[in-house]
Length: 388
Image (cartoon, rainbow, N blue to C red; front, side):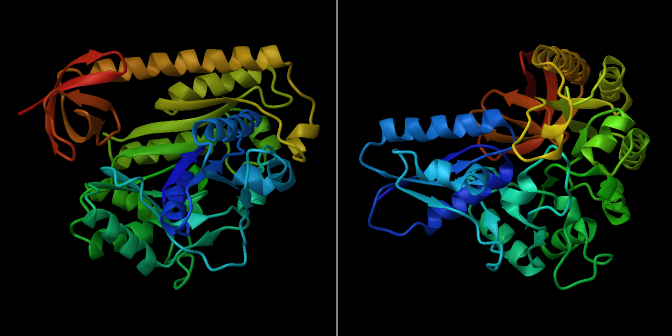
């Protein structure tokens, strides 16, 4: 009996795929396709992945699950390649999702669901309300991953800055408090990293850790989405442009070596050229060195789908422009690291990442090795380092 997983989408999906792989009943060969619904393209890729899985594994049973399946169960159930679908039960007890195929960097899910209603998003429907795991369940999952050889733990979820420890008050049990408790309880946890953060929800305790805890990795990926206040309002985001800039300033003040990544949507409905320029300038204003750019994709039954749409060619052009500007900033950042010394964790094939998440290749380095590397050059998307 074998169980293979095909995962699309976010890091939480990868952690959940590993959990499903371990829990699949014995006796049959399965391929689990864990779907994504963040864009129409993600749904198309899910259907494509299912068809490919059937071609490559004709004798296996195919289980389709995840956000796209949750939103359109009948559509996926009707696919001839699918033997079974699995949808989520939001009333069932929440269990920890941990692991990433026993890799050096392991993802541990601490939360799922979302209580916000961004006008472009369907994930709150696909994953239900925000629910957080108890501290002890998260701690045990982290210990299990460390025991399997993980050298870095990434806390992940749908909206991890909304984390609220079930056994504590929101003030005492937010994301910052969770990180502090984990780092205190597990001295062998040498590298803790955070997945995407909602900048408006970053709490003061987390900012204190940013400045004072070297085991918390200094790269922070922020869900910014746009740089224009009117667009942010129409997205139903809960921060302004000034809020985003101010938060980055606070992070940099707490830890000058911190780096910032960001999600940005190009061509949101009603976006004018002036509004798009404000998003473009946000890359500089927030010192973004790792941008994920999404051309707007109308999701069914969302408020944004009913707003006046920007012409598709304009959306594509604005997304391309954002990507080019983001790439230029990233290239300048990587070039600026040549000649410096960076702490690097090697993940596979002599390649890994610095604490600030710069990709680094070190010839002859071994998997799981963590040491200071002198950056001697750059080869395409990777820096070239030499361990002392």
